[in-house]
Length: 393
Image 1 (cartoon, helix red, strand yellow):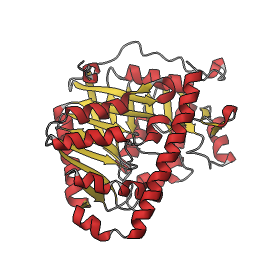
Image 2 (image 1 turned 60 degrees about the vertical axis):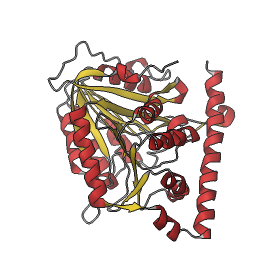
Image 3 (image 1 turned 135 degrees about the vertical axis):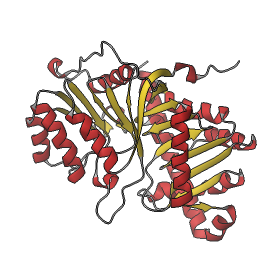
Image 4 (image 1 turned 180 degrees about the vertical axis):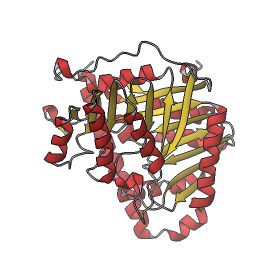
């Protein structure tokens, strides 16, 4: 039986702007917060108490003080080092603030879901979704280049769906009635750019695996070219098979990782897959100027995705992830050109010959151990979340 394409669910009528990490991203977010009139939903994995995080917090505080209803939701694990004084300044301004989920659920000792998505929505009219957290390393400092990442700012009909997702994440049953989000977008504007897109949600607990399915669909549908930038790349067996099959069909696939990662074990585990990737005629590039944190892809110059989703089981089964899938040749073509330029100017290619030369028995054993350890942890996590899910049906 032929699968029904999820691309049929993409809606037109949108304005979309690509944002790259560094000052352009943070300036765009600060601008929409400063222009907010009615409400703001600000949800992210990390907001550090540094210059960048304080700048964003101050923008939210200013909005709350001028009467904008402001919801701030931070992951309890990702953002766990805020001072009491910093939290007090947020809450005393009138911002509705809370942490998303404790690190562990006590009943059954199950791992809890992490809020790994990064979304800012203002007035139900404009949203920013991407992979950047709010910290200096994503902005860059004098003498230190920002981490490579992307986001999109969009306006249009899909803001209605986005608001629905954010409200469900905020409105837990234990939230007092007066703190719940009841905002409704009565009408939405259509933009002449008429870009088709869909906000894609991964939330295993809620039986939502939209980003995961979109990647699988694109591997099956790709005809000519795929570019994948992925910071913590550890795809499952089925995804690797789909990549291999796409390569056998003649699809030119390039995957880009960071030369130096902030997660050494993940880096070693990914390198364990280099042999498989390269032997299947898939090109590998490593980004050199700074850490690569991007989670983006383009396919055939027609479809692209930008967001927080990594190709690994942590994103599949233990995190809330949100991406924007974009079905537009003009936007995707320009994005494809940007990624191609980064590969050309800021990356080194890893060939099978070069990779074999730099491998030693120690790196082979270390890579195998890292890969098996992470896969085991992910398998355990999958079982825990599966049991939790079955009990809630």
